[in-house]
Length: 181
Image 1 (cartoon, rainbow, N blue to C red):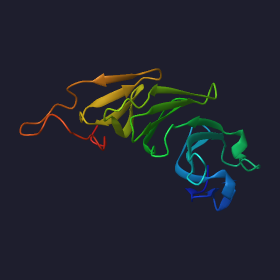
Image 2: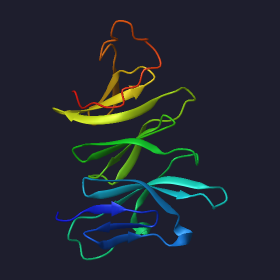
Image 3: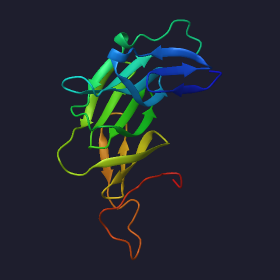
């Protein structure tokens, strides 16, 4: 569409017009992303008891006359108030969201459903970057510094890629960008 999509803590705008607004009791907007006809964002409720933290996918298309009602969004609880999104990616009608605590979640726009490919297991696992390559989404990971791929259904580790360069530690490596790929 035409115009800039921007977000603040309580409102998302397109071309200077509010398209989604949260009332104070509805929480705060964080980590927004637009893909597959959905605005996906993390809704934080730090003052709630217990504090709330969830991903929400709300249908929206540029030029849509009506504002987005967050009540029609499709939520996915993140389980802990500490979780936030490090990386998003899109493969076809699937939006992948990877959290700082190891969760990898997928919203399928065609079925309007969330699924989790990986949940927190207490071990360090963080996806920092995503890039589309042919028919898959490549993901840069910590602590291996290697790539994972999402093919639309699951995650697969690509061990040894990229290879560890001479003189570089083989652990505690971060693949924070994939632009050279």
